[in-house]
Amino acid sequence: MSGLTSLAFIAAIGVNTHIPYTDGAYANIGNMLADAHYLGVSNLRDSITDGQNGAAPLASYIRLAAAGMHFTILSGVSGHLTDATLAAKLKLIDRLAHAAPGSVVAVEGVNEINNFPITFNGVPGLQGAVDMQRALYRAVHADPALPGVSVDYFTGYAAGDYGPGPSPEAVAGLADYDNQHPYPNDAQPPSRWVDPKHVLGNEPRGIGPAVYTETGYSSDPKLPGGVNQDVQAKYELDLLCDAARYGVSRVYLYELLDAYPPGSPQGYDGYGLFNPNNTPKPVATALHNLTAILAAGAMPAKPGALPPLAFTLPGSPPPYTLVLRKSANTVDILVWREPEIWDEARHVEIPAPVITETMRFAAPHARIAIFDPLISDHPIQTAQAVSQVIFAVSDHPVIVEITR
Image (cartoon, rainbow, N blue to C red; front, top):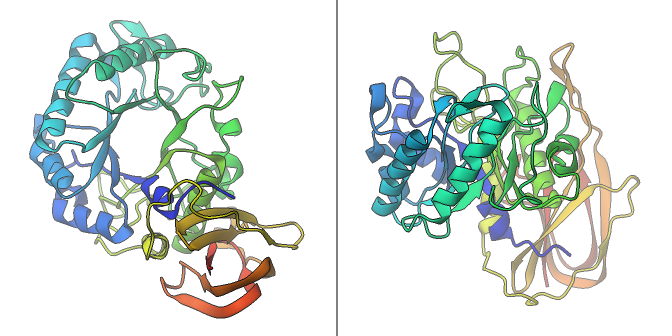
């Protein structure tokens, strides 16, 4: 049985934002806050600015932090970085942490060196990124304004012309969490693509603590790897469940909203959970339902508070499962399958087979409820005092809630 609680599962979900962009939908901080609350998440990942060249002022970050948002902040994106530019970035992060204590949870190394080349103190490429990572780790953990703040590794190693570099699991002084951006290729199901053994190419000796600070699917089927909005919803729920099953500590979906409409000069890529007019896409609605189901009646579980729950799912092949402790007498079991449901050549959804599953228990339980987050946050079926339940699974997680 998993030691993960339903509240911990929710707490591991984050979304990427672009607060510095003041020429599009991210300029509306009120909408951003409402969107995050609707999703039921409080983790945001972004760079940080204070009005430089028309970017957002620090006050925008402070407003979000004061409303309960928590930040992973990028320490650098591209260009010629130095000890001085790192110190200036950390000074700005310190100001946010001082204005809203506890709002900064992590500082991340440079972003996707394979796509956005950097130098650090004149050293280019992978070595420059490693050098900056060491400097970042030392500075954050020596900073009295950032107690308890973790350091996430840089991304883009083992890609393009770059080798894997050192592992933060094996080499001290680099990061508290390894990190990459595992975007599934060719509109394929996510399980293989978010498996740390596939993603973290710098850890041949074993997988240590890890986060994924970007991942997701575009809902623009005209783009390579893009899908429609329905498939985006299914695959991204699958992705979050897969990452939790693999033990990934935090996952940040890319991104909160589509800042610009299709055809705009700034560009459009369709990765947002919300449309350019700020209406929720199906993925936002599904994520809202998922977090609402898992949060309802949830309480922090004490170690050993819930005896192991024995169940069988005799289907062949068996579906994926993830067991979450919800309260002293309630368990949520997420059950899902991941068939390929997108034909990239024809840009159409492939209907998934519907599999009837039978979950059996050693003894009757007081109540069993089945939820489908693609439909609502209310049960689609319930039963009392039964030792088995029959339900359908196709291409996204359903939740079997057991009350003893």
